[in-house]
Length: 109
Image 1 (cartoon, rainbow, N blue to C red):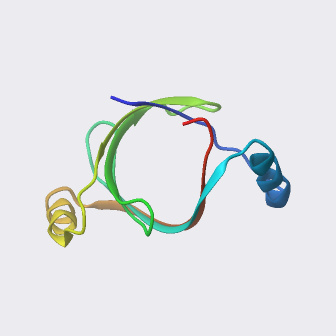
Image 2: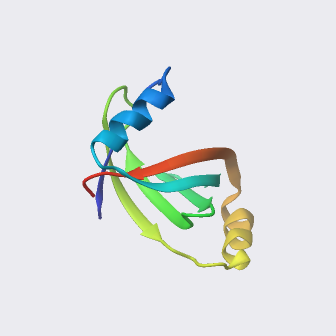
Image 3: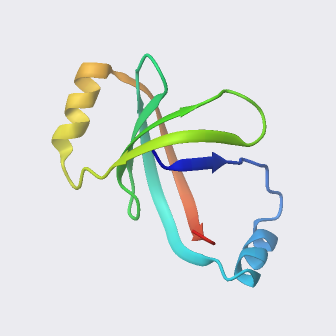
């Protein structure tokens, strides 16, 4: 499984953050309107991410703790198949839906 370290932090000056990213040659992939549909599972988290840039079925296990968190992640790119979403909703049920706009930058990966 690919290793992912997640750090979430409050940012009161997004423009400054963008300048720092640009200074370090980060590549801006764009702004992505993403809808994450989380499904009911006994262990870990399972979500279907529907976006303009990123579309994946994502399973991950992560501790519920403050600070940086290590996640073990499995990604599956389902393509444009509405049947998968219907099956997951029917079999597992929807836990929560998160609708967001996300700016995506790549640096060093």
